[in-house]
Length: 212
Image (cartoon, rainbow, N blue to C red; front, side, top):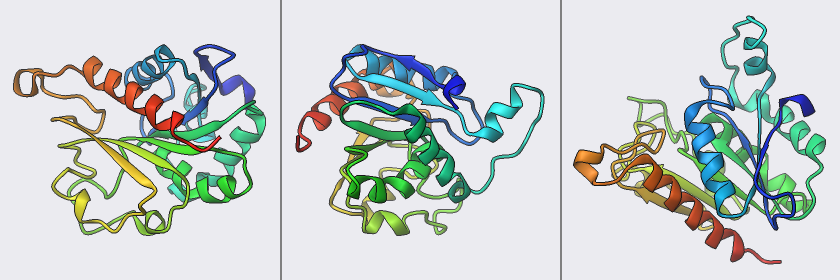
């Protein structure tokens, strides 16, 4: 597991963020790297890891992503292997954030994590708005920040406010952002870098509001 970590940001950071990748792209994809860099730039220690099926692709063994819930033990193993000092925030991009959200409450109850950060949460499969993946989010007790593009096909700004979500969840809407939080600059006036800077600034303020 340790050889699958990518580390960025100051070693003496107050908060560490552990991020898992989405279903189809690795931990060093352009979008994951850009997000990690933005978070590190505001003072977070950011650590990325890969689930085994994705790591196997680096050896030429292509495996499809398994059902998200079957990855829960791998996420918990990554936390144990990391052994972070100080407050730990878990999360990830898309599926990675969903897996983190499923293990969060048990870990939070045990004092092992401080919060949950999701970058583009997959509220439903694209084109299937009735197939919600929000059951556990109704009762989530862990402080959570979801950063979501307003036109994310996995959950838009028109759809998500109608969901029954825990009041522990804060949502940052990024204008015209897609599932990678990428906007169309000519339409929105924003760049991806602009949105990631907003994510980082908002995440920092959110983390600093957490109970010590």
